[in-house]
Length: 459
Image 1 (cartoon, rainbow, N blue to C red):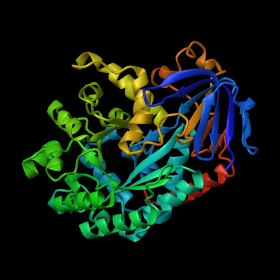
Image 2 (cartoon, rainbow, N blue to C red; image 1 turned 180 degrees about the vertical axis):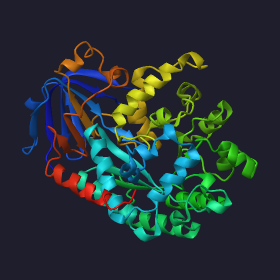
Image 3 (spheres, rainbow, N blue to C red; image 1 turned 30 degrees about the horizontal axis):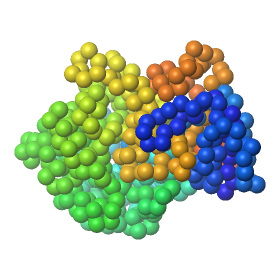
Image 4 (cartoon, helix red, strand yellow; image 1 turned 135 degrees about the horizontal axis):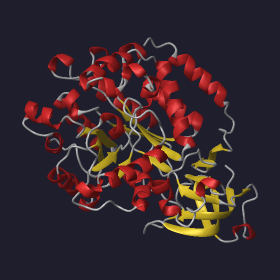
């Protein structure tokens, strides 16, 4: 693989492990999948013969964003007037949307994945975790395999969260029977995917996370067996927590969700939960003590209308925090860069009601980069430094959009927001998006194929 010399970058956000630092007017050199050097006048040094030089004048270069919670398949049910949260109760909404989910085909899962990942890449995301919990029986058993194929096509670094639901609606679940599995079926497919795809090596492009959907929709044994399998195979654990279900879990089991999961060992440095907006400070302290992380999904707050997640308390207690888009059922885009801006602005909105101060804008950049890498157990992504993965994106700031903002690259995304796609996105040392194109791919054809798959669903 050829290396790249990004010459004369206006700013590079570097981090040697002690926190982000802005380096002005420097070059960045990649070598295969890794960053080789960041410094001045690298063109005058010994460069490999195949190095490709790019003029990066005016570019702000950032570490690639790490998405830690999504539901790609939901891209096929977005911007639908008949599914408007503001006109339906939660129960009415669930009753309408889950039957649609249960009709998705194997092709739909592939093309919804290309749709989500393409949008993520255009907006600077280089690593994506997807929580795929929808397994309609008619769609076959190779749905996650289709997602890995989509990631290969686009060059995305992909962590597959193999989800699942096992509790019937007749026993208190919200999931239709057409989407249910047994615990044995779920665990068996997790094992198959780990054997087929999981790569724990440095710069791995494929990993698997055991991710039962949520405790309220699965039997206890599903979570117990998930812990057993993940610890045995050395993979991570994920589920939804604190998303409005804690009172239901307490009524059902005598414990709120955090205690219920901790009791069975579904917690720790190899575990991260999505959402957590309804958790108490005592529950957050418990998670911090166990090392359990949080994937904060800010944009669903707008649609769901729930309380704003207490990020200031989480950071004050030392929780590891990453960011996620969430699925289109509660966020109609796959733009993690926009989520970074939303996360900061939402905290500012409610700052007067919080016990702890809002973290500075640069910390929100950290949630989207090093924070996400930490949740996924990755020490090779999330920051720009020699030896780290060459996962990055560039914004050409020689535009009217950025007049008056260029003095502070660290706060730019969280505080100002980025209204356009990146000028370049690189993953594992390969340029996957530049100048409005996916090199080597026909976006118009990909779009037409996705629309054709979408048209097979009856709404």
